[in-house]
Length: 224
Picture 1: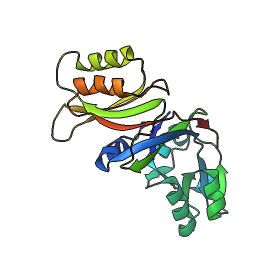
Picture 2 (picture 1 turned 180 degrees about the vertical axis):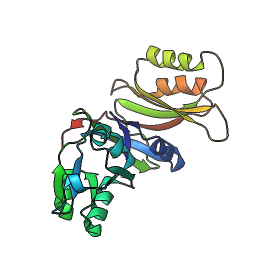
Picture 3 (picture 1 turned 90 degrees about the horizontal axis):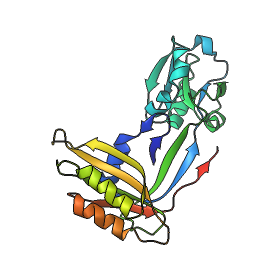
Picture 4 (picture 1 turned 45 degrees about the vertical axis):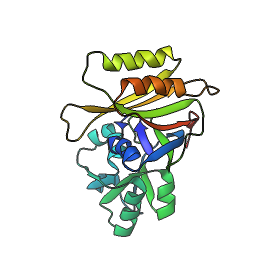
């Protein structure tokens, strides 16, 4: 499941799904993302009216859309689904943002290659499993909330640092029904031979409701 992009930021809804469906993280990988404008054979960019794709894909290509202001970006469920829809519609005025393999799979032409804003466009994907138990590794993910007390978050971060961990990500999301209260999702790295027990104890003492989302091996960066 995609969780964060280096250009467009976090996929906040997916963070919520981790807890909502009791999903546990058992691994991760970072994939280099490249977007292409694909359409049916014979279509031309200058004649296109719309380009469809996942909202995150569209957000990663704002610069390209800024230079093609006559095109209307349309949000759909996913990139591969957008390519499939374009192929079935058989409309030369419609295109999709999708990986190059989607063009091959659905018989589409690539009208423009690598239109993402940055060549350093990476997405972090987490490997999840319902009800899985932490299996060990050098990275731990948690979710927690804190009382409205001065310095509560600072104490948590200091405690983690003192326990020998390195915070790699912290994301806050509003708690529905509790205005101006937030739930935190955090990732931190530690020595692989060490159990995160001490780190989790720090969080349990400081937070209202800690959830251990998983301990796993930090992922590699893979080119397409």
